[in-house]
Length: 310
Image 1 (tube, one colour):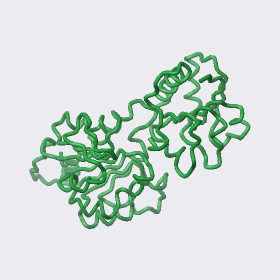
Image 2 (cartoon, helix red, strand yellow):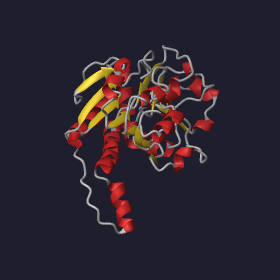
Image 3 (cartoon, one colour):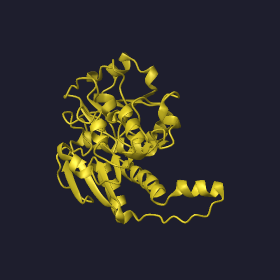
Image 4 (cartoon, one colour):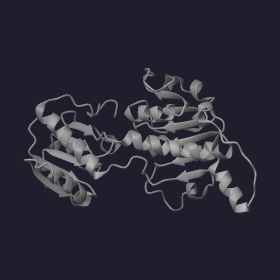
């Protein structure tokens, strides 16, 4: 594929431009924020690089779309994708970042940080024995690159890690992988459940009332997509003690509205979609590497399967 005109659309265009210029690409490149993108820009470009496309954007005018993030639901959700247009995504340190994010909150729970903080405030000397991670079972939804990395990090601490995927195929770092069609049998004894799944038609509202009725006292961590969780069902599950605590990095609506009940619930920890931040340097490195492979006809490990949605 011959690529000559590249459109970079992002709120961090200055940082991206700084790193891209270090590669001295022999290409015409335009840098825009999303609100400045016009149809004329798309007619000019043969490549679009950004986090998402607005719903009314005619992406079929370009040859190749590259997502600066790991997810591509911002491009595919609610639209028909022209399969003549190549779609790729960014692959970098997401798995490591998400793994460390999840580990930090699991350790906080196992090491009883919150209770000790309360006791310090009360000047109360009450010994509580922290729990060993090797005695805990974690179920990770999503066994792709990110899920496998998270599993590897948790397994290194002796945790029993199980995976749930659409296919149920065995993957490294998991004790066992089950298909999503039979996941209820796996989650019944879980201590923690982590969602790393991309958003597709099959994963939307996957964590609903029926799911939460199968668990008891879990820690629920969502680092996948907000629309995979029925938020009302999650609130109900917390009240019923089916979920002991929730750590949420993604939401149905972002930014999370100030009026949302999640903000003030003592069992919920909110972070502003930062578990897998795309740094400008990593984004550019992945894009340039993909560009070289696209132009030379090499195999693309980060090519999106349009039918699967990831």
